[in-house]
Length: 74
Image 1 (cartoon, rainbow, N blue to C red):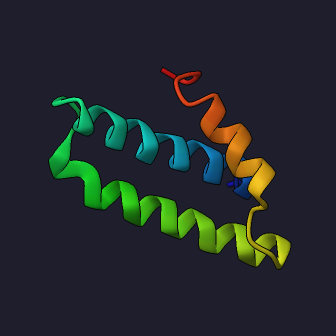
Image 2: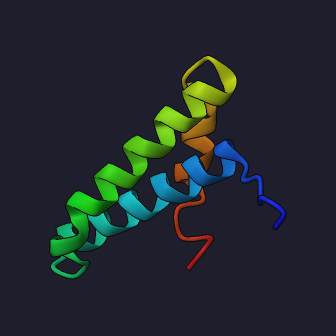
């Protein structure tokens, strides 16, 4: 069975956006407060995978671009 290789950068961006969207929604009285811890864990795990793959953390520009397009994946 072939192993699927996933892009750590894309996964990080996706999980960071999911966390940010949920935080934004919670601050507006919506969102999923019960899932917030999972969102943090998923974002942290993807950050570790990014660091392992690229031997560095995401730069500020990547984070800015990811969050500027926050609702793109909805």
